[in-house]
Length: 209
Image (tube, rainbow, N blue to C red; front, side, top):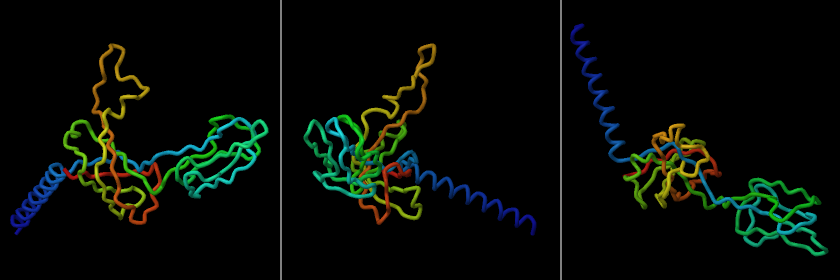
């Protein structure tokens, strides 16, 4: 009886190992996965357009505006310079102080178009050749673990994420420090499924290859 139990355990271990190997092969053969990803969008900066006094400001965090909507005004040299939204978006942060003095280009608020967000994912250079525009992508947002979003590879970066880094890539002997580089790709999301996505949220992506 003891020998029989031992044999059963050995068979179960072999089957479990075989199942794990099959799962790993299936994942590596059919998908490229990265947890180095985040929700992204086009930042919008609303700035003062003239030097003078910020005589009024009606911007509100969380409020959406259309392109051309008036959000404030600057009294400059006896005339008023209107501050309008350059494109449609929702204010996510603001630093405007009514009746303060501003200069041209002073940031007053920052916004995003929350209806047009995307995913930026960094893919290891060793597998980037398997990524093609148009491939289907499963997207998992860390903040909403029970929902899977679908997307499509829209763009593949033309430089590694570290190309423009301020940190040096060589040591004192002028030799490059060879580490695996990552290349950013852009993934268009096909609907949010009611999720409250905001720029900067962490995500994991699985690209169907």
